[in-house]
Length: 144
Image 1 (tube, rainbow, N blue to C red):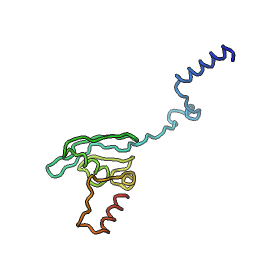
Image 2: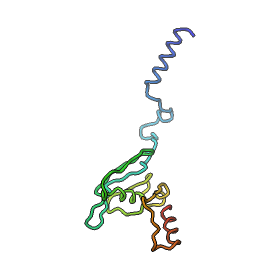
Image 3: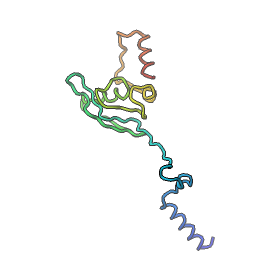
Image 4: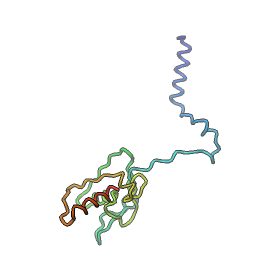
């Protein structure tokens, strides 16, 4: 290859690497009012102003949290800080006193949100006061 061509090729490659990507002509030539934009992906878990009270005890007070897809999050705190309560609200097992929780854009506790989540309790004990049918119905309800 001729040296001048090699330099030109390198310059083109360098320019392409630094230049912002070009939008497709369909979007580039539209008027601003007609442009089409991609919808933002909802957070895997979005919590806004979440609060939970058990009588006079405040388990959660105004929690805000966003967890993106693929993000790993740990909840740290002493006993009674509300870690399990937050997870139970997100799973739809407990109702919040105030605020909102969404799972993939669906309100926590709704069928789409329950289908997107799995919950494994730290200690599973068979509730002796429930019949086998009631236990199966409970798990069916939880799974959506």
